[in-house]
Amino acid sequence: MDKQEKSGRYRKKAREILFRALYTYDIKGGDLFEIVNEHIQDIKDKLSPETLEYVYSIAKGLDDTLDEIDEIIKEHLKDWRLERLGYPERALLRLGTYELVFSEVPDKGRVFMDILDLAKCYLDNEDSIKFINGILSAIYRKYTGEKDENSSSV
Image 1 (cartoon, rainbow, N blue to C red):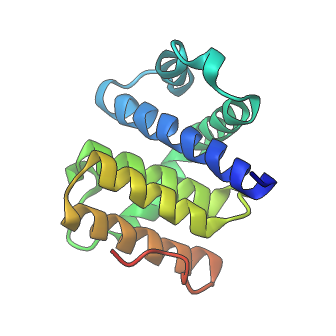
Image 2 (cartoon, rainbow, N blue to C red; image 1 turned 120 degrees about the vertical axis):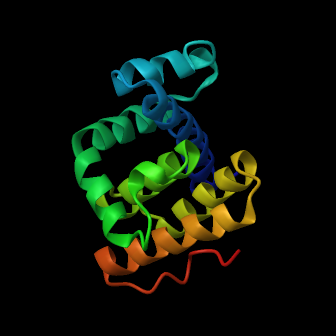
């Protein structure tokens, strides 16, 4: 397994942990770091140091920029309010927006793939998956100035 493949794996696992933590955060509120710790307490010793470092790094970024992230998402919702979105959709959009706009992750295309994989796994709703892809694609185009050829057409 080459280094690129390994980095993709640990980021994918970290994204799933963060998605679940954001979902919980949205439902019950509280401190995002405490929620992350609750989610990983039983598996922490099985996670690689890279995965843990990435989880905490992204959690910090999310915590620092959540209001900005929500404003960016709101700008791209047509005839929808952020509050009307389902918890899983909102969590995936927040995570994807953070990584696409604020993080230094080298492979933005992989972010799209992992977010859409999580959507397929947890939502099982083709319309929600297309909705998430469309919103993230628009955000990516606006904030990077790049065409989102890496986004997946579902």
